Image 1: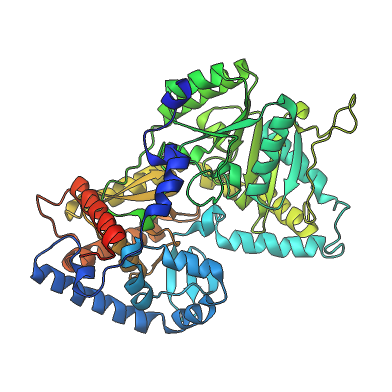
Image 2: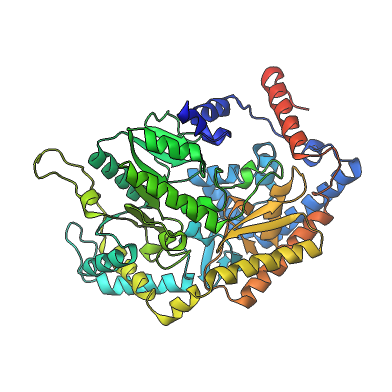
Length: 529
């Protein structure tokens, strides 16, 4: 009963049910007039949307011809392109969008805070390279060049260490406040090793993750939709819940608790993506003090009950503060994982931890080991690029980027929200420092269209659309002002094209009920009207 109470009430909190229900959802799509009137808008609004869509599609054709052509050509051989292309928007609208609004996935160069595509378009980068780009692309290009020069004489020799590894270890121990370090090739691998070590040293079987939190794509930390097999040794519990603390205090099979600090922006919700933007119910916002207090309570409960606390700082590490999320939120983990930016632009995963937890063998039982190796762990070029990144953190230039970081980016978010409110646009942003989410203030089935208007205004978003905007710290006031101006212009054009038509009967609840009826109708009759 206690375990049931600690589960979040959403489907994200019930992995087995979410997986079962996902298998029942039938495919159907909106064709012809239905694409433009799925919210039962008046005919004149539907026609305005169609005209606006055609105008936007023509702009894409003239703006991105080479980038789009190569994307279409390559798509058949790149499964990832097929997946991300299909899931940029809710599936009912995907076919026509993929056909008409192809901006392209290929790029030629980066320069400052801009990306340059194959057609020469300069796009302000809001993708953040999935979180890697903290200090700015020019910095990472320099780190990689330094790494090639520094490690070039050794080359890709594996097994032995380049001398730079020793300096990396010293710096990481100082930054993390922990005793030992192991190197891996991705954040996912680092988390896998952290969980394996926790189980090895506690002799317990289960891990705890919080509802909606992402810890890589391996099975045991992704027990719901996306994982084809059930995971029997994972507890998915509610974030910020006293019931969760009670479970941690009472159960004796819990080896570790995983924390992704990014959940502070949207507790108990998964990473927001426009593929799930079927209405305007997306919510986000940070209570830094409240979340800090919660993490400290989790930490205290874990230590009182012999549970290993793992801070998954792969995404947020070095973005919120030089000392990572543990400094930002004031929590001290037993193990912490890093990745993304720490590689200096190259692939990496790092685990730092207490000496007793990092040990992979037992002196008194020499055959009972905890194995973890990888061919490319501690690759010389990666280690040299990492060292360039770590040394850069100590420079006055980079330290200045972190001075007043929260105040600067909170003020920028507030400024954009003021601009949107002044024009009565139904859009707002919420942020955790440089990590932003776009929210919508009026019920609509078409909010996902905003990502395409933003692209047409020269703003580059990742495949999750307006769910995640990631800025690098090198954005100055002038560059941000340009982004804000273009953002408002895109939203203004989207409104003019009729996508945010409103009606008192059009509520988020009504939209969801309508979709449920459509799914049931199509599943049992094979049609959708």
